[in-house]
Length: 154
Image (cartoon, rainbow, N blue to C red):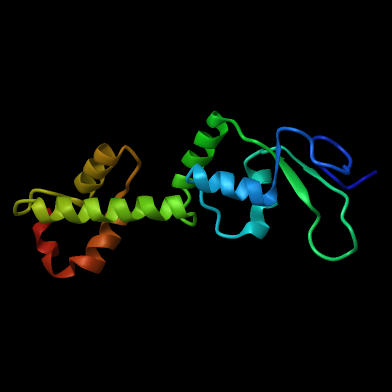
């Protein structure tokens, strides 16, 4: 049995309609604001996000097997974005953490004397940004950036 585990079965000679090459898919993701750090991880990325792919016959024995990917739907694109936002190793996730850190510092700086706790700051950040935030992140950010002013907390 062929060790090819992709949904359309055996390797093919040419790319079918509705499929993109690796370069085309990488550019497609860039346009949709999904940033992938390394192009050589594209097959693994697509496998993790259930994007259908097929492999072509490779000429020679060197390099990676050429792969074509089915164009993902808009709902699939939105699912991928949501998944990447909650992954702190992705570019979208890192952007979200920066937004959270800025909002934590803003709320802390605007707080009156002993009116806020770490939990209340986390709750306000979660409410404003619409994403989960916890007091561990608040503690880390305040210890790094506002360690001399921590007496403002409850």
